[in-house]
Image (cartoon, rainbow, N blue to C red; front, side, top):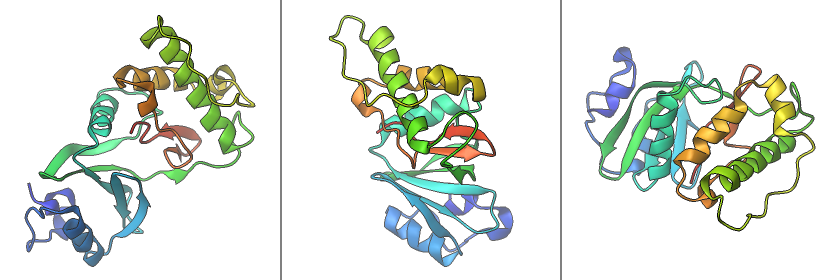
Length: 199
């Protein structure tokens, strides 16, 4: 699979096939007019101004993200990103996937007064669900700070958000792999989208 196959046919970069290093792929994308629009510990996200999708390159060690992508691709929950095409193992060191273009989480929206309220409500619910279903015999884990809004209040304005959280927790082997913060929750119009909730 060529990196060029991730691009539109009219944008093919014939001079490359499979850069073995993510840094080499990054350089090629910059030369093709892409800009870095996001990054994380294991990943970099690129887009061009007129594109309706982003291209995410991520390290092979991020097995939890691969699990999340597979789960999201097979689940019609509106609170997961829409991926375009397949998850591609470009080389031994990294993968690539195309995902819809989303907007940053707004500070106010339907059912919340600040984005920190949203993050705390989602995170707390994930921890509570983990305690109840995934580790019922374990000592109750301390939850993050109580949110100003509850997940039930958020669910009224964002139907399906509770199920989205449950599905995410179900793929974790440990609740400490949960990685929900302001850069990993975005917006599709007025809909919350959890983009990369695992580490």
